[in-house]
Image 1 (cartoon, rainbow, N blue to C red):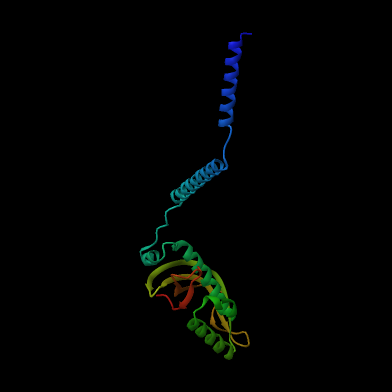
Image 2: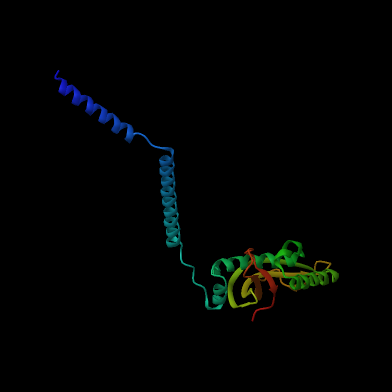
Length: 215
């Protein structure tokens, strides 16, 4: 082979070798720099994903259910207030408390009663027992339950609920004789009870703070 060609082939091989050596070599500083860039990019992508998911959750969240005129101040005080759920709970509490009072089992309902209401119920049960009377009640069902008034004062929400229920109520003496009511008659009973709850409370339960007859 021509010596000149051999010379240029050697030079070309040397140049290619140097290029490969330079291009294939990285210092530790460069590796750290690339790793930090990758980490920053990953964090940015993760943050963007979270923002997108949060936006989707906000868009997918259903609007709050409308409330009646008498419950608007409760919604203003607590945007999470759901009137339908509240009334479902009030119906359950009403039936449970009425039945417990009739049977004299105040212990089971103590957590749901304000101190003054509990005291009034306790005195009524003691007077009934002292007279030798027993109350027999059959709860047929609630025809109507609605918020008729509400207020927010000093961080406390209160709601007056009107109940109309069908009950069979009988009071008997020591001998079992009927002294009040009729075991064969269903009475329409009207009550107005007031429930309260602190706006800052994490406990969703409301407390019965007042009772009264309906009009």
